[in-house]
Length: 480
Image 1 (cartoon, rainbow, N blue to C red):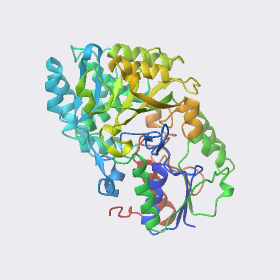
Image 2: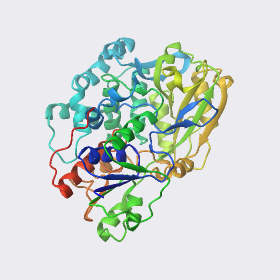
Image 3: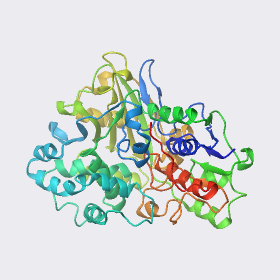
């Protein structure tokens, strides 16, 4: 056996794609009966209602270097909403991030020019922004002027003394804060600003795609390519130790640092194991999926065309709620992230019916069911929402971890998104996927470039192993 991959999430499958395309024998082991990790789709509420079990909307599907090389957009159907994301406020007001930057600025009124000045220089160089943020760490940037533009904006929106100076209305800062809050950090912070500005840039360039048929269609395309090129995928098999695996020249782990330290304990030097044990995990999520009798009755009718919504009110309200979560509490009025896939994909629900995907941030390891808090926040901006609910399925943060042990304490990012752990993920190294143990590599979202369904951690780990173990210095062609 040339290569073994433990874990069939997007990164593990991306690694296997690379090995199989390089003409090597590769076998993937997955503990669950189904593959996909953070990109699965299934019936969680009622028959015929297809829910995305973790990720639902995929801002990186069109910008990831791996997916572009893999030609994902030619393999599956993607729909790109004209409204990438929106931020409802009370009394029917809303900030709306159209894919068209100019349309967004026009709708923001007096804050429109400021929005355009903030994001326009990034949007006009969106490919360079994606290349830099998805690149290997500790690498000189190819486009330093774009990196400088991004860096200045991160400093502004990550600094409490500066981030409120650009806007004068409630809509624009709320719209921006909603996307910054994806990082599940106290705000303002440099880490939340970095992640949020990159997401906002993609929202106004390539958009935030939704896969037809659900997120599972992404991993099925990858699995089909692996099998087409001779690779194997074995499900329902949990790996407890490296000794349980077949002999292989390269073994890649799409797992958390904590799991790697346990499974490969006798192969890793003590200093590296201790570094893995010091890796910190962030806040968790509590998730609720809804089966609905009709579309969400948003007070602002434009919101029906939004693929993603951030619920939480004004910038000040969201800052307060995220501060509570970071302090170990469950806010009464939480930040809630909502996706409406069935508004764009009729395969997700029976005719006339809909699915709604939602989660909220909670302290790591929370056992609290947040169905009522999420429902109340949606009802706040969509009166009558409760009357549309046919069924719901709830997962606490601990339930999220039970379903996928990579989500430690419900942390779906694979590790706290602090500035330090964006640079040292999981350790400070120009090649963070390579471990000190001969032939062992880490390829999960706990490594660079971090969380998201992009496949890049697996791609970089596999390309590193090709060079280290097989003397192959160039990545194979991944296209159709």
